[in-house]
Image (cartoon, rainbow, N blue to C red; front, side, top):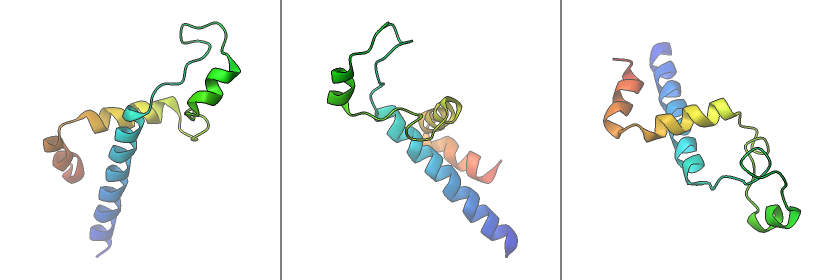
Amino acid sequence: MGYEVIRHCHYYAIMAEIKMGEMLAMKPRVPGPGRGKKTSAPTERVLQDVPTLSELKITPKESSQAKALAALPQVFHFTIFTGK
């Protein structure tokens, strides 16, 4: 029974990461310094109202991994779940 519970938890964790990657891929990137602009107008930030990764408590590495996982075809999701 313990192994089955662990497999279910792993399945839901992977599904959550895939969903997070799909949502992050749809989110527009926030303009600002370091992305080609030397200054960022505060009004531009208020108008967009798009949270940054740090506001969402997501590291760039987690974001990248989630988006890469979400970009995989669904055929590979079974392989990830089963580990085969």
